[in-house]
Image (cartoon, rainbow, N blue to C red; front, side, top):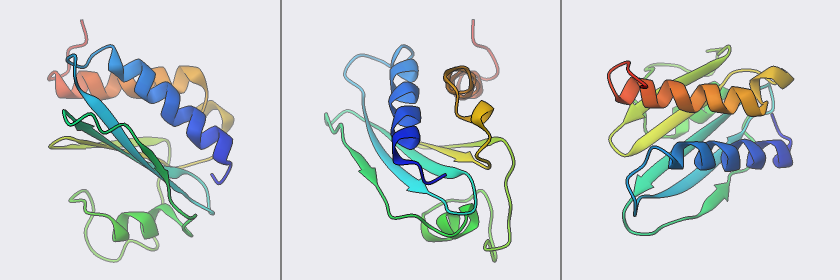
Length: 130
């Protein structure tokens, strides 16, 4: 996904929806990695320093290339041939890593964002969202 407006809209909606579950005073710093071959990667850093910024990186060839260039423990080895489908989440410390594996409109809709946030919250609460 290299459509900047769609990437920024996803980021905005994700932050707006997850903010409902965060403690007051927690801010979110975002790094967006567009991908030429489909999908994108988002890093959402939760912080108490009041850092609210959004950085749009230059497009990378594939999700695998992005994952080989950022710190992560989700997948090791040669990542250039790795392909992702759907939405994959990785929670580590104060970071939420969202890996979108495709460009299908249904993966980027407002409902998809809500579902992604619910999965993050459910995972961080041990599988319970209510």
